[in-house]
Image (tube, rainbow, N blue to C red):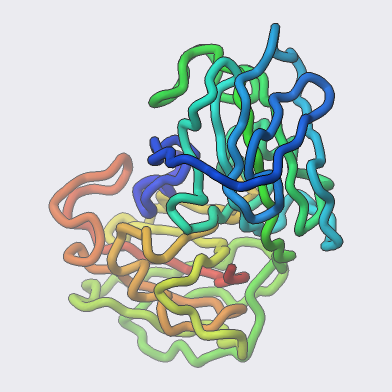
Length: 311
């Protein structure tokens, strides 16, 4: 089964080239273990600038704590929010940073949403910390490179850990009656396993359906939120699953402002965190006339979504 998360959301893979303005912060610091020095903007929350790496880059992942926060230690499975700046070892110009965008980056740690150097290097760091990662090619983009990043590049990142949220195993809440026989029926299990989804033999609805299956009393989801979800996605016509986070055991984080599948985005806005939701997405609010991997053109899509947290 091929993952379709990249078709649902604009991918944020630390790859876009950001404008690199001058940073005039007064602080500077020299780093240890051969990592490039932070030459300005050394404090947590400031956009840093980095010197070019000197000599041969290390062959192993290096994580240096520039300043340690007093928050919880990060664990695999946590939904985290960070600011970052990244550049190649042999360059003094960043290839990307979130500081200029004024938009922190959300991810689920250990879920394979980013390069391995991030997943490995950030585990155990505390919320509120600034760390510098030196990432060898085999834990970065390897021989193929990516965008402005050359093949076999050693990468250097300064990362500010802003938030971390522990993710529950399942949605919980009050069961809501599913008494419309013309709509799919979704299981109400709360054991962290995939809920069952039974699609009826009738024709699909023509308009978006967004119904609670389990209704929790959490915060209301807004368009500006990033939500951490587990989901099963199916095609109404053939009743086949085209994607499921339960297959990999890894949640997905959806910044709703960047969700490209209109029905998925609109169906989650206004629902409450901790709930399970049935979405039926007509072609006009899905992929329309375009086939996508295992999804035929003009397909009505069915999602069972657990809204586990928001950032």
